[in-house]
Length: 94
Image (cartoon, rainbow, N blue to C red; front, side, top):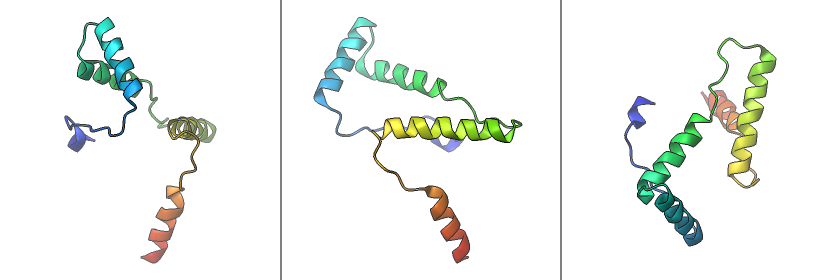
């Protein structure tokens, strides 16, 4: 993760209504739009619990389900490919 530290993030095709709502929110907080978006991203990142290192199988599976539910919510329920299937296929090809 260190190689990503301090990188710029570009988000394309943001709905103009969303941008305007963020501008208003930033003004209410006395921040620039960039500062407001950075604060929102920081808060969202803080909300992601780390995976349980020494947890039980049940705790680890619960964490995976939580992350999958969050990812599903972020993608609007659009179906996503299973990266595990791809990893197994690549492994089998070796």
